[in-house]
Length: 276
Length: 296
Image (cartoon, rainbow over all chains, first blue to last red):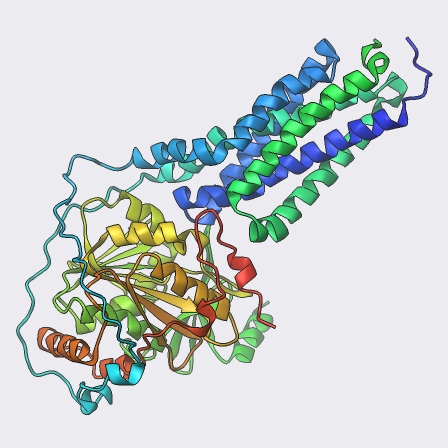
């Protein structure tokens, strides 16, 4: 035990960066993820509800499991073993998620009625090279009609409407729960792993019970500052400048990078990671 | 409390008739100067003349009748976004044989439209409570001659197009649910030159990736531009074909309103000037908030 030896400054910075960037990545996934889910689950309200709820669930699980694992394994590189698959998972969201989300939505489509597939395709008519201007478009239409001075005399009514099968309605309960299932499938695992960083860092940074309060407070603060940055940078900058595919790729790469940083911490300061 | 309430009413020179809060909107119905108005989160959605509900509506909704030029004997059309039901009332009044399906996200809006704006579910009008894109996705059986898009989310800062209803992938989905001659009409809030010109340009370009012909109608009394995407790739309008379409429609729809002609006269066929530098919107990248930043 070397409780009184000062913690190397570089190690403290590395641990802080891990916590901060972990918090950042979680909120990028939450904010960009909510937008990503909208083409499948539509209108914003239940999508946001489920996305927030599922990320909170991931955090709760990650904190609980992460703290337990930290006491048991103590080495930062244990986290790398989880951050690597989480990073790859996030990298692959654009390829993997659409199929899963299609499945959730399309299970409500009643396939019993045959699809009207016999619709004739529009013929490839020769496109005239004519440039149409607004005035010549209207040239042959009676002036009194364009001025609203006439009405119609003819009265051959069209046939009454034919009623085809209506599209299946989604039951109210699934309208609410489907987005939560979608959020969970795509975002629960990576956010769970990222949430494990914080309790792990408390274990690695706290040298004495007397300092646990200070250390854990700093870890909460750093993680939350990272999350705040993640929220605003995602909404104000990333969504405007990048495609969601690119944002997921960058977040996946960041998660892999955090795994690398964990290995670096063990390699650079081996004695600090081993004391007990 | 009562005094404060009366003071507020007096200041607004109108009477709040109804107020409710749903999961999606704060809804207010207000009567003022012979008009009834519907506000979502402070922004005005609809108005009508209480004495004649077929009048007093926003003029831009009239352009939702233009798809009938390609489908004079339309059987079934789809309207996304109910609001106070201006479009639905016009179709019921002027084209009574056309069946209207309305898709509205918020059940509370449907309730208000029925109680305060005379919207009825009849043999020729059905309301579906659903997200618009989800409805199109689940619809495998019905083909529509026209789809009209007026689904906005509003707040005190203005009205915003939900991005998942404005992308290339959305228009591909909509085109699948249109008949061979089907037409999609989209209300875009914006102008050609300045305010929100980029979103008008982007919507034009995005629709053009799916629809061979896109026409547009700038509203006369508000900052709305209605874009018309025509699915059939059978040559664009010429003065002769437009004349023929008008004649067919006048014969098929004897009750059509006299204002149809003056509205048609506002048709434009060339690309809006802002289209050139505005991006195509996709599910992967739809920077709508960036496009809404006013041009310098």
